[in-house]
Length: 238
Image 1 (cartoon, rainbow, N blue to C red):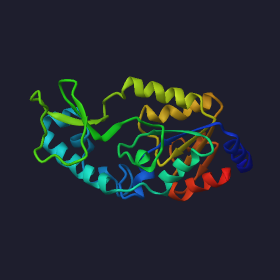
Image 2 (cartoon, helix red, strand yellow):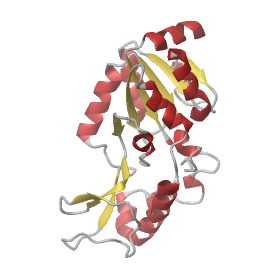
Image 3 (tube, one colour):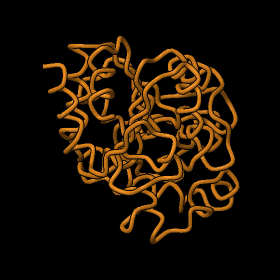
Image 4 (cartoon, rainbow, N blue to C red):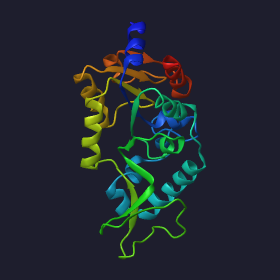
């Protein structure tokens, strides 16, 4: 079984990675659902919904300022860098649920950010959007039109941008191998991406220290971290 999966990896023309908070954890960015996760000390409904934002935009922006400081001080780890190295041998597309930008900073050339980006902001009313790499001194920040700016991320209860999601489906549907790394696959609709891959007879591989709800559907589940495991995938091609 293991040997056949290795052969499929080596023969693959296109590998799609679906990544979550676990891949960035060893860069010092806490996960949402782990034992030391971000939701442990915060009520998600007070921080990551549009209604919570309108109820208390200052609280939400204070939290996002802290997240931005944490993310901007983090560096890509060996897991991120291994994905970049894979590009030397095979076409690689990253579909990430993370908003930290570490895949791009590591050097990955094709990254689809399903849930938005911590560096992007947008107006709650007009069509203004921008990239901001510093903290906001005055919060909540205001747009030139006078309305409140918000992080350009997908909050609970919001739909993914349709164009982004359609691209993700296309990539998932035409890959030879899908590696699901550092995500528990409990958030919809990202948790359906392995289904699209399986419909194309792709080989499904999971890298996660703990079992997930999708583990039984995987061709191979590796109970380890992305930092420890992904460099081994590069060695398959070498």
